[in-house]
Length: 154
Image 1: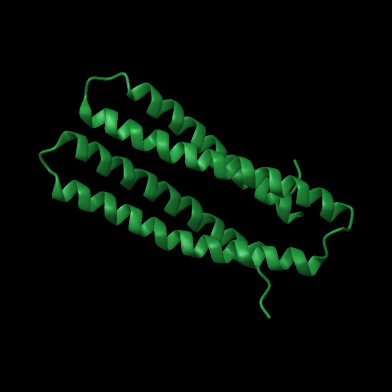
Image 2: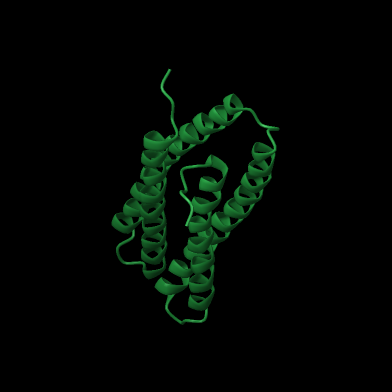
């Protein structure tokens, strides 16, 4: 097994593979929950399916881009300085995402507190909260890894 920290673009592909898996599993679970008669589980499933579709699309495009860039990097078509700019850009985006993830978690919690008697809204609230929590953990993990292994301080 190769070291995932030897090549930034390979690292991106591996980590985006995790997001792809999460997205696909969520779409399957979400779609399967649409057959239930429970308004809670239908709405929860709709959230899983929707967020899963977004995660899947982002992961597929990200993996394709990282794969192309890895080939260019190996053929010396991308300079180390350009690679570092991309590392800095991704780190910045992930830090912003962590902040957005907190908003998703808080939004889900707000819906849960506001609509305590409506089962469909409870499903929505739990769906958003769980997706936000997972993304918070995932994005936060990536921020930490990039800081430890890739980010160069001036």
